[in-house]
Length: 218
Image 1: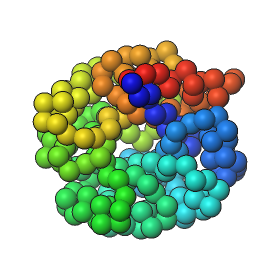
Image 2: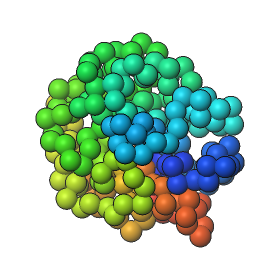
Image 3: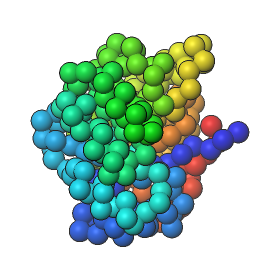
C-alpha cells in the first residue's frame, strides 16, 4: 500500500518568509509544495505568479505542484514549467484551448492536471481524463483560503476514482480545500491519494505531526 501525499499550500504561509516556508515543508516531511496562483479574474483574489515560483525553486528540491486559478492558462503554462513547476493544473472552463494547455505542459516534460471547481459540473473535466496525470477536485470554492470542507464533493471524487478504475487511467486524485487530519480518512475512502492542506499544516501547533497524521495508507 502507498501513502497519501500531502501537499501543503504556501498560500497559508507567511508571505514575508516564503523561502523559509518551503524549507520548513521539507523539515516537516511534506511530500509536495502546493502553489496557488490566482489572477483576480478567474477568481476574485490575487496571489503570486511565475517570479515567485522561480524564486522559491532556488530554495527547494521538492516537487512543486502549481495550481493555476487564472484565465487562458494556455498562455502561461509553459512559463510556469520553465520557472520550476513539476506539475501544472488548471481549470478547463477558464481556458480557450484546454488541449493546447495540456500539450504545452507535456512538451516541457512536466506533469499535467485538470481541476474541477466546486461550482462546476463533471462534464468540464471529462474530455481530458485520458490525457492527464492528476485530477484535482476542489472541496471548497477556488479562490479563498480557510473555507470549510464540503463533504458533498467526496461523491465527485468517488466518480473520478470509479472511472479511473474502469478505464484503467493512471492519474492522481487530489482533494483541495479544508482537508485536515480529522477528515483525511473520508478523503482516502473517496479515492484521494494526494491532498492539499493549508491552515491544517501552517497553523498547526505541530506542523510535522499534522503532516504525518494525513500520510495514511491509501
